[in-house]
Length: 497
Image (cartoon, rainbow, N blue to C red; front, side, top):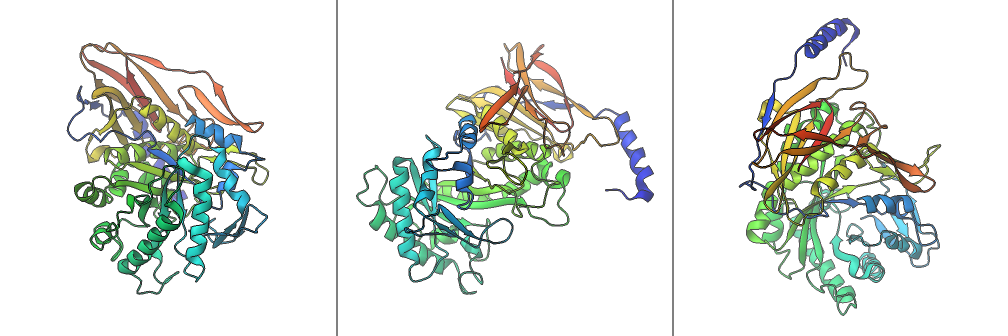
């Protein structure tokens, strides 16, 4: 923010911005899916991750299911088990909204019933190295398996083990120590829980491995884990790494850190070496970001979390992740987390409510649509257009959509009119019109009054309700080209007719 002494300079610069229109940007995606487009996108690409201590809030239980959360899903390692515990969950307080320990009882597992049709990966505790730790993990895994049955797709062993040294393990704990522990747990779960199960679950290859907090940290790397023998017993079904775009560093800003396509590219590209290694050496093993969102601080970041600008960031973040052939993003949610897509239970004087990031996921869900063969092609605009991102979407190899995100930060309090960006789009021959849907908000810092294609969603009497009227524009195409205007801080999806 400009200090008082320099406010006049800031105002003069603002007026200059308003006085000149932005240079025209031209977009041209090939008619047919090009080299460099993504693999076919998993329709579960934008999934959710629920920390153990927040799952009861989001899901409820058999007697009190959270129908608000269920409606939203329809629209779109610190856990110990105590079989004699009457309460669903007991939490020991920790930092940043993350508890130091969570104790769950039998009622806790009823939460899994309240998202029918959902598939689940369950994280098995590895951090607890008490003498009873392994047996407790086996007991939990058996309870989870018998609750979820065929809806369980993997057991994930451990959480952010690259952060174990000097925390829950000795300071010299390294990848080799981890591999020994991981194999011991995987063998035990395979033998004691999965073997002979009645649900058709693979008894051996059923585990999500690594779960590192970083793409690489000291000895904790994907190649080191596999070269060290993590899959010698054929247990690994998928590999998960974690990613957050930032924390609470002094340099974090909505425009520079999030509404910045160059930053999105830099953040996600660090995972390409691990992904490429697996595709080259273990092509049957899925790679995903099993825990991800905007920042790892979770709370007290209202200037960048849970605002309209973060929904635009999320669209760019998810689509660029698809283009890198990352199979799935599990977007972590938490009742008090600033980036959560919805608050599932009353908090303070507030009723449950939808938050701006959910709109980003709704838009991406509509972009993927229903076609089983969707691919994403990132359109390179050059470094000078870091406040704008563009993608071509292909269905069954044919261009079907353009996605355009104007990441230029603007707010209703900004001291100049909302700038606009004019673009031209190329279309295949024979296409005479397209429909345009817009994601609209009052500004980058807005946390309400958001709409997608004319529609908005929120909480009413325990359920998710929709308001507004569906709205789209018709874009006329002449000689394979059309012009479009996109205001700052807005996303547009153009669907070919």
